[in-house]
Length: 293
Image 1 (cartoon, rainbow, N blue to C red):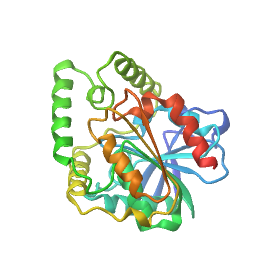
Image 2 (image 1 turned 90 degrees about the vertical axis):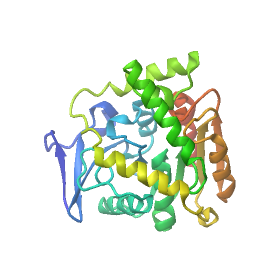
Image 3 (image 1 turned 135 degrees about the vertical axis):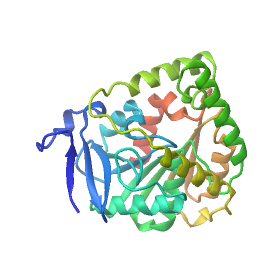
């Protein structure tokens, strides 16, 4: 098991003065699989592990969210097995994705972490906590719902329509999936995509066709599965979503929060699936306050 940088020197970076757009991509070999990751923030305390959304790689994290949280917390974002620059193939269930994430976290040497899972990443975060409860201290679940929550056919329909609209307008489908088509939502989308372009060197590899298919299969399987017993998750959980999420209805997030014994719920107004990015100015301090409690 070993670490190295991709496209960087071996000189240790000065993390305190660095921004997300400049952080080097590193790899760690875990059981023969190279995992790509980036880390930022103080090298102390319990780290916050970021788990990203469907078809996303490291460059799809909002720099304002990462940089804002990294002022006070150690942030580690990674490509799970088969995603972006990581090796192997993406598994077709969120249980296996959770086991891969656990192996990565333990490969870094951590015995306890906090989790921030967005969308598909929120499902993986739940699997990590159910499979390795001693590993997780606190959890943030954004734009996500419980396994077996329903609505999976609606998610597929919404995604297909969004991709058709994106093709017709030569734009990113997240314009339609993450943000409402209101004046405020359109401004938020424009700002979000501008922030994603801030990193112009050593960018991550794009998502592969195999990864896309396996992730979609995992989401469908999870949606049609029997619900998990969330009452066994005793850790504090911060649940967040937008009130106009087309992919994971806020009612599913609210249902999940009710089933978690120690959860708090925030629903951001006039916001879609990417509500935590649209409302990053409120979300970042809320996360920092939640982790500090």
